[in-house]
Amino acid sequence: MIRYLILFLLLLFISPGLSGQINPGENISLRFGNNYRLYPSNVTQTEVFIVKSPVNQDVLFSSCNTLTFIPFFISEGIFVTTDGGALWYGNDTCTGEPITFHGGDPGIAIDNQGRFILTRLGRSPFVGLYSHYSTDQGQTWSAQQVISTDDLERATLASDAIPTSPYAGHTYAAWVKFAPPFPLMFSYTDDGAQSWSAPQQINNPPNRSAGGDLVIGPDGSVNVCWAGVTETSPFKEIYVGFASSTTGGSTWNVSENAFPVNGITGVLPNKDNIRVNGLPSIAVDDTDGPRQGWIYIVTGQKDLPPAGTDPDVILNRSTDGGLTWSAGIRVNQDPVNDGKDQYFPTVHVDRFGAVNVIFYDDRNTTTDSTGVFLARSTDGGDTWKEYELSDHNFKPTPIGGLGQGYQGDNIDITSTDSTLWPVWMGNSTGLYQIWTAPVAFSSIQSTPDELRDGFMVNLFPNPSTGITNYELRITKESDVTLGLYDLTGNLVRELLNKPLQPGKYTAFFDLKSLDTGNDLSPGIYFLRFTVNGYSKTKRLVYLK
Image (cartoon, one colour):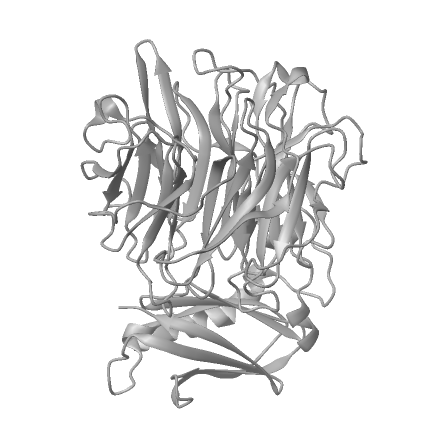
């Protein structure tokens, strides 16, 4: 107890000298790190994904298709950091048995117990969808568990880690079945991927479905989207379908045609005829902010306003749980019809409630090459600010032997409390590899509204299993108090009461070591920060 309090006060005392001063309204310059590969190797890495642990945000898990050709071998990359991205370890092969019959196309999640879950396709004779789990952060993997034996498209995963959700701990999978009527299918596990529910059909499309993406709402709702496509090749996207469930997937509200699109499925002639698509990506605002519950979907489109005659990124949003949808909003801010290609968008909402979309973009290079851009909106998609993430461009080329124009079909992004983590595939080293450029929020987040009251606070990890960190920014000399309260509003412990100079302070306390006379029970607590009479309260979920 005393040791933690001493460290707590020492950190408070020394932080201003380490962190520098903060001035109200200060403009923060853009500072990105250099681009680097997560796991450099001589194996082709393509179709990349990344997720954050809900238990420890220093833990990130990334995966992709991994391919060798002589001899031909396909698997799923396992790339992990446990220190917030300082170091990455992993393997170009998921070691879950039977290794020989892995078919790639991974879907990944980390559940509320910190368990890694991966789904993949199988190869003959194991056609279908299979899963593996890891209880040691990706170092070893379980043998395969069958989910479906149908011929199907890659599954997408999402895990419910919301403590107040009636389905907390469930992990959901959704995929398109390759048989008429080509519906979106669904299954879930409530035991960490040791077993899965029988697959069920979500929709009954008039033509056929393609793609499929899935996200958990702040109330534990399951939200899925897919593309409705034409009946004949190249199966162009003509609308986006949406479904939601508040019963853990037992029942669904389905809209086969939530809004129209004009997708870009086909090839890009200027880029060596690489294959592209306009499949939807979905995200939801699960913050406590004013847009909590808003749902965002991005697609690649052209020839349907506000998209121009070249591929553009278009966002549609719903403010009522998917019942109605906005008109399309053009995300990329280059001039319309300028002949530039934007494709493979993916969307993510960060802890500030900002909408982040990353995509390939050739506006700053020749038409046969591309870079990677981030578009960020802090007002729900009304306005956008763009940043170029890539510090070098590359020339997309098809990967031989994998179908016309194949280079992979998607890129991805997630975030921690401090950093955006985009991942994409690039071939500038001679073969496709996973690249990233971590983006610190301090480099792109304008002065937050909270600073108008003279201070801002951030709390992490949340949920917490004991040690809890926080950041406090104050703009002027202030009397600061910090109290921990239980769900009924009773003060559990005063953690701080002292004057502080302007600056940024970082500190921690350990819920397990607070001398309250009784051990703290798991549950919901509140931290109340008061600075010169202004108070802000942060909810803290304590898990043992």
